[in-house]
Amino acid sequence: MKQNITGAALCDYVSGEGPLLLSRQDVEKILLHIFKFGNIMLLVAILTKDMAKMAHMVAQLKRSEREKNMMKIQYEEKLAQQQQKIRETELERDQVLASLGNTCFSLLIVVVVE
Image: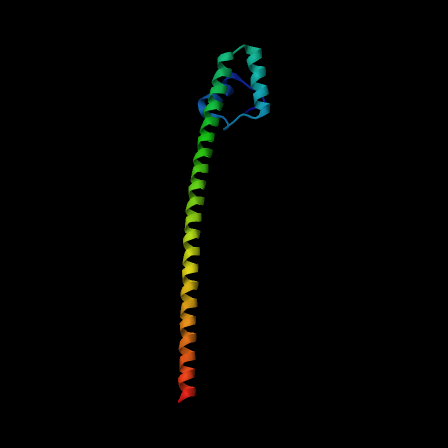
């Protein structure tokens, strides 16, 4: 906002050309302007605009939170699948090693006996 608040500057803000949200200093300047010129409807318009912007930001935040939760669930499911594959691979490895151990032992017995 400009240093000296004018009615035109406030109308620009209300029409969407101002900052996303008002700073505390801007609010104080606007209130001084409204008290000086008695334009309560302008205050209502400004507050309505800021409330709409905040509601939009809250909706975006909620949407982002839902997306994050879905990604977390997908990650945890994929992690569980990968852990299960690791367990299955380790079991298969152990079975192969045990089988090789038995085969080697059997070959050793055959060689010794002959």
